[in-house]
Image (cartoon, rainbow, N blue to C red; front, side):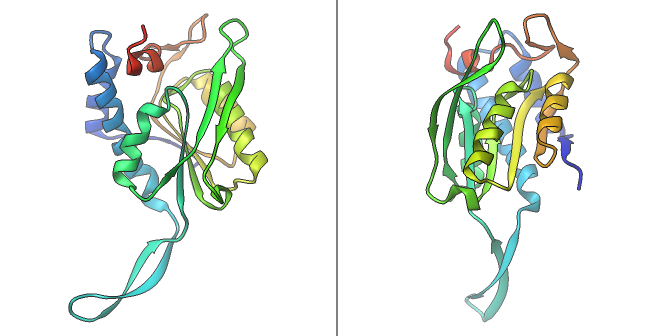
Length: 208
């Protein structure tokens, strides 16, 4: 099965143009990121493992299918928080963990400052969300942490990626599925995605 998917959906592309626009204000940016999260969640979850169950409809007994494993959504803080509601709206029974990472602006290397996970999350289907796949350092570090705890079924979902970051993640973790809303041109000399959409965390939370 293909491990890298660039989601090709007209509505997603339309909403991506909104968050790329530098004139989009905080409220609309935040809401649109969440909406994109829901669109991506629908695509990402289409192949989740199912199990057969027997239920009683108002008419008769019927065999149906339900999710075989719990789903745990893990945003990389802080920007990843902006995608969580979109996923939870589609999978309300999902649990949410957190990984806190920050990027050293000089070395571009990630540093961990927070980890909090639901009970028995290592047996679940883990959806790691972080909007920007730039150098790939934060995503690789987060996957390293999840694997250290014993997670085996991990999928990463991002809004926008650079070829450099995508190559780094797939080299470090070839078993992890990657879903992106768009694969952009390159990284600039400051480690930002071009054309990108700027600092997603600052734009979600209105801090710049």
